[in-house]
Image (cartoon, rainbow, N blue to C red; front, side, top):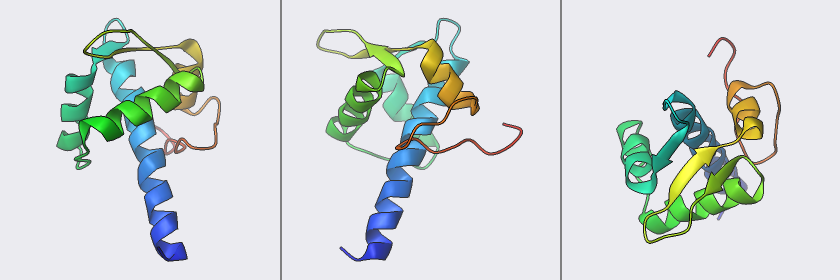
Length: 102
């Protein structure tokens, strides 16, 4: 893959991670199951496989931005650190920075 391709792939990955955090932020209990999150990404123009979604969720869990429940269907819950990254109060390499005013 060219440098341009790597850069674009990294941007997509970072944007998807931010969108996942922001979707959780909109839920009353900051929690959503993987099927809802995957559909939300698709609605925003990011159609990805279930495996790719679970990889993003696992990475976000490893970074302490959300907590995943064990089970056949993953349920993600936003952490305080995840909310800070979603709102731009904190930054983390690997997650896009939200635009100003959003």
